[in-house]
Image (cartoon, rainbow, N blue to C red):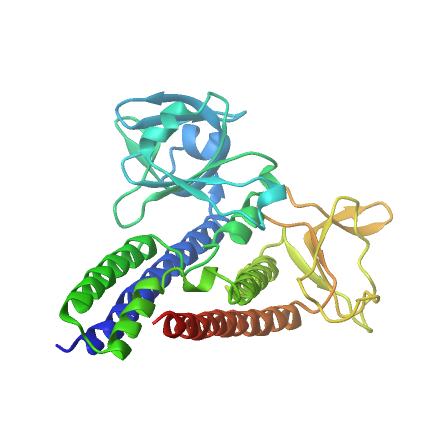
Length: 373
């Protein structure tokens, strides 16, 4: 195969196709993580009556802390009501960032042996299948449906929000395949460049070989560096918008699945509906890069548990820590659509800026090489 075709093939394969395959893979992995966390919010919370007294099998979630770790792949956890055993053979273990870092960090996936280094009393969340095994009821996953185990700091009530917000790759292009692919492409292109120098190929082909060999570094040097920084900034904003979309969709999950929960209501504010009184303690949620300022409470939404007081009905904080007591300062559907559009725009802009960074620096490199040659 002529050298010029190899030089075209190297960047396409090693700098585009292989990293892109890794990008789709990690995006799917984190999407499944978020879906599992949302699914777990529908599971029954482990209680003494269900687990210890009645030994009911099924899908449950557990909030508690680490009690002990056994070398046989067993984890003992406890809360105020009871202790439980967790079979860790089939499980996905994650460490979730704190509230302050949930927008800028991503979860850390831990191997089972790292759990041995965690101190007794560390907060833990577990969701999955609960079965009776040798006279006791235990969490036990399988290869197809592994348990989800979350190690975390901070409040239980923010765990679902944090998981959805940070449970995505910082930059999908930079994934588990990218470093190896770029390294392989760089080594192959350098070997090919050395062969072309020894073979005294035409100067235009040699120039192309030098550019391909330098391509992994090209976006990071001036003057294209400024466009690379713009690319990174646009991709980060796109990530924020995708996070906004998922967080706004979160309290709507009951409606999306046609699940009627008397303990969790969606109250809409509109011209013909009075504002529902809210008890203290609710949080508000908005989206990044919003156009204009919202000053009216009309066409907004609140989510919570209705409680009957002496002075009427009030919207209060649900007892379930995975049900948000929330006020949205806009129509949720409009916020989701706006976030989707913004995410697409920022991602397209990021691709534009990385292309400009590469083109500008390749042009500068060609000028410099020809001046030297």
